Length: 340
Image 1: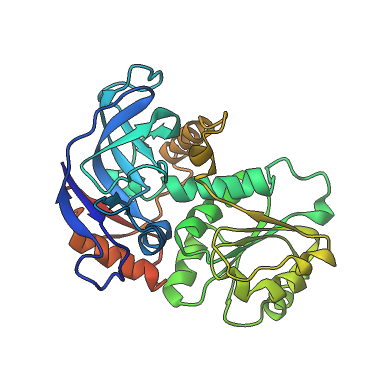
Image 2: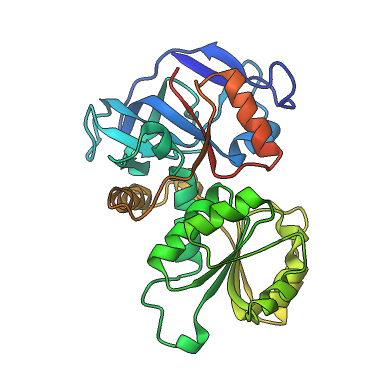
C-alpha cells in the first residue's frame, strides 16, 4: 500500500521531512477494522509528533489522526461494524496513523460517517469534534439545562475560534448549551468565519481583553477554552475570569504555574483527546458513541463541516504544504486531503 511517513524528525523544509513509501497492507484481528482511506485531515498534532517523536533506527512513522474510509476487513471480535460500512474517526496516537491507503483501527474509536457530507467534509471533523465535546461536557460540564440561576449564566471565551477545534467548539456550544459565546479573532476572514459559526461576540486577542469585554457590557467570563499560546494569556485569564471559573487548555505551554489559580479558586484542565485510546480506558467506546451522535446532528443539518482548504491528493508533497500552513498558524478551519 502507499503511505507517507518519516524516518527522522526534520524541519518541514527538508526534502525527507515527509516521504512517499510503499508498505505491506495490514490484516485486521481482534476488535480492529481495516479501513481503506478515502480522505484525511491534518492537525497541529501531526507536525508536533513529526518534530518531537524520533522513530527508532530503520523504522518509519506514519502520521495522521483524522480519517474517512470504508471498512474492508474486520477482526474476529468486532461487534458494531461490517465490511462496506462508511466510517470516520481520529484514531490512536500510539499506532500508525491514517496517512496511508489502509489503516487498522479499534472499532471502539470509530463512528458512522455522516451520510450528508462528502468524504473530505467528514474528514475535517473527528479529532476536533471529540476535543471540543470533551472540553464542554467532560471538563466544563456545560449543558442545555444549566439554567437554575439565570443571573450566573455561563459565559464561554474561546481563544482562537477560527481554528479547527474552535470552529466546532463554537457550533457545539451554540447548539447544546445556553452559554454566551465569545471568541477571539483578528483577521477579517477569521472574524467573518466565527460569526457565521455562531459566536455571539468577537474580540481581538492582540489587544487587552478586559477592556474589550467591558465595552461589550461583560464584566467577567465563567469558562475559558484556551486553544493556543496559553502561557501568553495567563495574566489576562486571571483578570477576566469569574471566581470559581474553569480554564481548559489543549496546547503544551512551556511555563504554566498554578499560582494564578489561587486568588479566585480557579480550576485548570488539560484536554487530551487521545487519553482514552492511549490508556485503553474502560469507557473507550464513548468515542464511537460521540461520533455517532455528532453524525446524526450533522445529518439533521444542525452542525456543518469545518473544512477550510482541500489540498488535493494524499501524498508527501501536499502533506508538506499542510504542515507548513499549520506551523504558520494561519489556517481558517481544517485542512483536508483526498484520495491517492
